[in-house]
Length: 111
Length: 150
Image 1: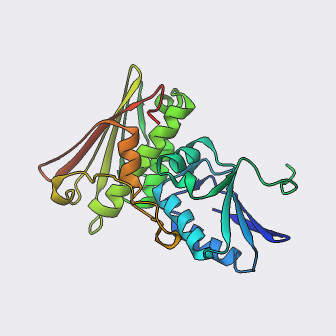
Image 2: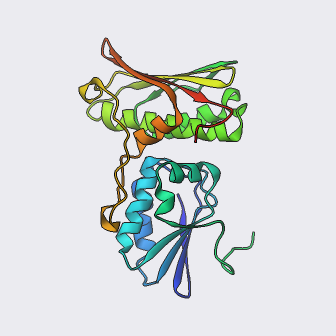
């Protein structure tokens, strides 16, 4: 799972380039997210539009990343694909995260 | 991978080693079979979620202390996918499937980071049964391939 971060003003945008966040990759995902969010920022947005699949371990990792950011720094999610959305909905985690259909205005990458 | 999913029209059998990376490869092989390719996208997504949770659970718990194989049989019947998964690992605690009740979503610092797996399986399957016979765990369930229950 390749994760690439970009600082945009008060926001860090992390793009997930792998197609799955699963049990085999959950620890790596958590560790890499921790590295990428070291720099101070008010918000962290994770672009998941390329992630086709997330299992319960992957979901646990996303929750762990949010908790590690602390209560004053939000983890927002963007571009959930159909299967990922289903996992968030069934576990009610869609009520915990701010979820955007797509990256906030002006942050979308070309291509 | 030591086994490719055998694609016998309406039945698939696959045996994989009980390890996380093998689960990932096995899921990809299963999802690539004509049988699962023939399902509507929503049904495939549901199948991937449930199979991933069931297989990961076996790797993490049943094979926590020793290696072994997992046998997966999928059969398409009308609008249902019949799934049977067996392993020779440890039995379920108390010989029963976990209830899959979600932990309450309380304070931020107490948000659950796990315990989602059986909730997902129970939410998305029908006729979920577990039995232990002759040192083997057998999990079976049905998935609605046309319209997912959630």
